[in-house]
Image (cartoon, rainbow, N blue to C red; front, side, top):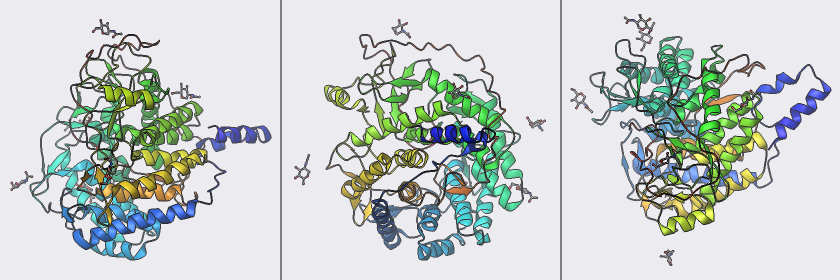
Length: 553
Ligand SMILES: *[C@@H]1O[C@H](CO)[C@@H](O)[C@H](O)[C@H]1NC(C)=O
Ligand SMILES: *[C@@H]1O[C@H](CO)[C@@H](O)[C@H](O)[C@H]1NC(C)=O
Ligand SMILES: *[C@@H]1O[C@H](CO)[C@@H](O)[C@H](O)[C@H]1NC(C)=O
Ligand SMILES: *[C@@H]1O[C@H](CO)[C@@H](O)[C@H](O)[C@H]1NC(C)=O
Ligand SMILES: *[C@@H]1O[C@H](CO)[C@@H](O)[C@H](O)[C@H]1NC(C)=O
Ligand SMILES: *[C@@H]1O[C@H](CO)[C@@H](O)[C@H](O)[C@H]1NC(C)=O
């Protein structure tokens, strides 16, 4: 899709002194919503209000609704995660009564202690609570100061995660004692706090939060990577060094890469380290991780493991990459990255459209045309059924990864693809997803995940994660909304889909930066050429892809 490029060229011809001014536009200037958009948008609002009303009825004040048993759980420290995480979506949908109720509730949350005797995750608390509060503040006219005060309260508690002179925060804290659990973290946890903490600094006038968050990312970016520009997944806050050398765009690493481009966009910092590290990561991924399936020629980003082997595995979590590359490719005016991104978006959508429910699995695998080794990624080689599925669809559902827990990433990238390209196929895909949600996930007036995306009679998972409200339904709603509402040229979304107001992008964004110098990585041999005879047990994964966003290994 090169709509935007054509536009830039046309302008350049008529006003050759101006073209770089357009370099930083993310959204397509000629989006035209189809007539079906309004009705689809109404369906999304109904899903939101049905699910939220059920939450209100049986779970209000608790973290999650359990929609099958019609009860609740407090898996996010009991502060009412669904309420806080839903507020920015309510503001965007114009659900004022629900927003005001949530505002009243949020203003009374006591973040000084966990309501249940469990550790507090710095990452989860940052992206859901702190990010949700600050986004709700901005989206409601920056007048409810209590939302900033509450964010500050929880931010001050989380600041205890930096011990001594450590650059990297520990991942989990005891809020009663203000002490961390001394354990290994990962780059997703340590690197997905810059948007929220810098916004907290901006809104409170205390720069410490920004400095802490930046210090963590700078430390990760300063290390010698397993592959140029591609940081390892594990990191030890005590030493500031990587643990192992596993490289992936999936869980445990994912949003570190995501924020490398979003943070400089939000803050317009003139320090080139963030943009140049993102560029290096993308460039290296194209060189070393990009793989095409032997069936369907789908484009995937493989994992690279501790022993230097490629693993042809993908995940729902990883499917944010298409949207993130679209954002960065547009900001940097790089059509190569945009074109790759649109192919990544297609491959992830293919995991949806290929299943019985029209929803994609948590983990999948594929057979690549350019690896001698690394064809099979599982402990078990693909079964006859897997191979038959692969022959039809160009991926197969990874053993143990057939579930869907209401994650957003595929629809998130679909939203970016729509706003960037204007191709109505993304409208159609979003509409199909609505049908799948209504047909296969509805239960008791609410919505649940399912254990098997390839079964129309799957058992349901008894939890409605708060990100269903924060992310899935927001991205779907905005796909069908006026593109000038929450434009990608005026807002930056945190990894939980909470939008922050961003200053106008300067024409020089990302310009003049040099690519991060490639440190001497460990040897890596990409093997181009056709697929030779397969050897099913050529390697076995040490770990299956982490199942939770940012879960420590
Ligand atoms: C936090 O510390 C308090 C006081 O020592 C203790 O009672 C509580 O069990 C600890 N919580 C966790 C999750 O370790
Ligand atoms: C800024 O926030 C940090 C982290 O909570 C805190 O230690 C410090 O006292 C605050 N500074 C001011 C001037 O309030
Ligand atoms: C803390 O770290 C900074 C940056 O690495 C360094 O300049 C400073 O000397 C350190 N301070 C202490 C007390 O170790
Ligand atoms: C665009 O990105 C690709 C992939 O990283 C890179 O090879 C190319 O040099 C970039 N183009 C420009 C003009 O920077
Ligand atoms: C593939 O695996 C075989 C057997 O383990 C090994 O001999 C060969 O060097 C590997 N090839 C590549 C390209 O890694
Ligand atoms: C699914 O369940 C329905 C109703 O219980 C039944 O009629 C149908 O045969 C089942 N389909 C499959 C594929 O199991």
